Amino acid sequence: DLPKQLSEYFKGFGGICTSEAAICIQYEFDLKTLKFTYFNLTSANVPDVTEAVQESEEISQGELIVRDLGYFKINSFQYIDQQGAFYISRANTNVSFEKENKEICFKTIYEQMKQTNQKMIRMGVTMGKENPIQTTLIIELVSDDIYQKRIASLIKTAKRKGKSISDNSRIRARFTLMITNIPIETIPTKNLYTLYRLRWQIELMFKHWKSKLGIEKVQKMKYERFKCLIYAKLLYIILTVEIVSIARKLQYQQSKKILSIDKCLKTILYKKIILNLSRTISKGSMINQVKKLFHNLSSKHWQEKRKDRVNFEDIFYLFL
Image (cartoon, rainbow, N blue to C red; front, side):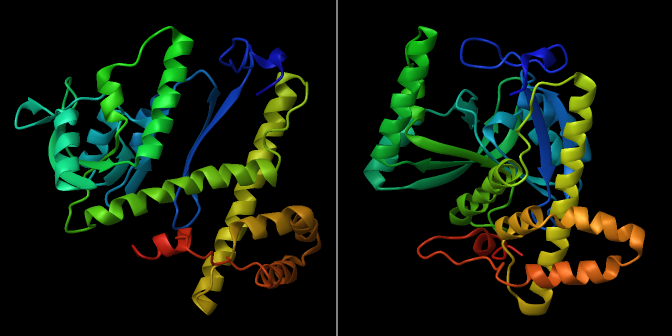
């Protein structure tokens, strides 16, 4: 959210519960290197799906794109496939799927899965009615507790809009639907959901931006000053993440241990390391400061292993 004086430049959603001015940071980064691969600033009322189409131009052969529902666009998945790249995404609940020229009946699938005690199935389908594409649909049956929570959320949303829940929405709430073009011989179905969990890293990264770097703290100011401030913060973020990325890579090569992004960012911020580095550039003692930084990060900054939980590193290095 931004001060309402900036609504001329960055429009919010408006209404009682939302700000008149707000900015949306659209970004994508490479999980292997932490490097930013796409970056854009838009008004908050610009749909995320618009960025999904624009970002598609940057896709290279062999890449794996992990997408959230907000970026679900059939044309973008088609483009990814045409570039020789791969995708995993949650499926939009409103999109249609056909198998052998017949629309899939999820009620029938639910009854069959309950009878056969199946938790997950995978099938080749045609997705979409306009400009349909071939893809693989993974259908996972959720627990009754998750189903009840989804229904409660649907009822709340429908009530706010003065509508009722359709039978199709109720039955689809029984499933978690995902699409992918990854061949089954490359990654088994049971591992796809595990791999998709890597998408949560982008949420954690943005959490670091707020809790450690204060990206969301904006006071009342002129547009020109705000632009200078937001770009300065973003440059600071990029530089900080780049330092952590290099440190993590070097430490893993030397010790096969993983540095914690959270701990490293906290140290860099609280000890004003970036400011100190900038001062040493003019004095010609940059190398010593960098060595000191990497030594500090390798001390008590290791990623902790949590019991009974699959961590990011466990997932990530499983597929390397």
